[in-house]
Length: 308
Image (cartoon, rainbow, N blue to C red; front, side, top):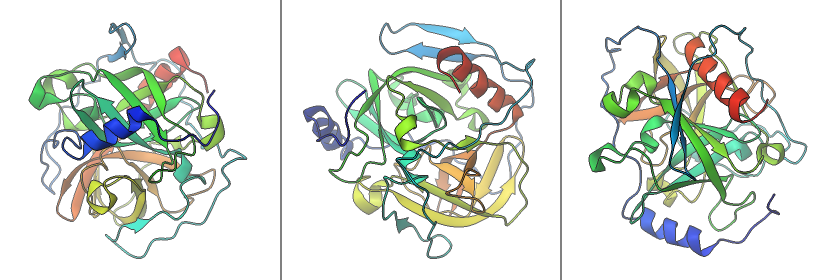
């Protein structure tokens, strides 16, 4: 495992330069405030792609197993701190991204061989990151997967407290490669290192929420600092269903894949992700809900390639 902190590498500098011209994954399908009609059939298979040998396999859901929700793990190296937001739709710079839960939020860099793209993700296990599917599926260029993917937990400008970590495998719903469906816009990234033991990780949950419930998101927006720093935003849940959730966050490119959590319990062992931010229209944004079926896929992915 790498020693921390690490200096910025030549590869990081190259990617960050490329990000200025080729930042953010393609804009997701625009959603209206009214929840769209969505297909309700069961998810098919999770396609797992290996970045080393460029091969892929299909992984079924573990729906026959009892569902055990993931709880947050707070590393002794990343003590909990109090959440501070300055109001609705007002992104606030995170003061210390080395402390949990901010240490679990990662900047993601995708190398497409000639250009780069970026976004946000969140550690949900020792070496597993949850993000949105469209970060991997660059549809305008007809590219299904990047050449390589890297994550940087808790990065702040030139300070890289947990290093640059390569992704070994990625999993996303097989049909998303062809239909870019909003309800399946999520992916899982398996890392080469168990960095979560140093950063801590967030839990995942499908517990129902109520309209206007207070929520929070953390990510790396391009417009505020060229994605060099984390920003947090507090808001309210405007709508939710089995597949999608709507919020009143103002977000920008680079925040795709940001975790959305309940404000209550944030920065404690109750820090759980219920949705992944994928879409923005002005001061309204939307994301994929982590329903029971998706959590079964996540559980099977981690049990197959990592561990709890």
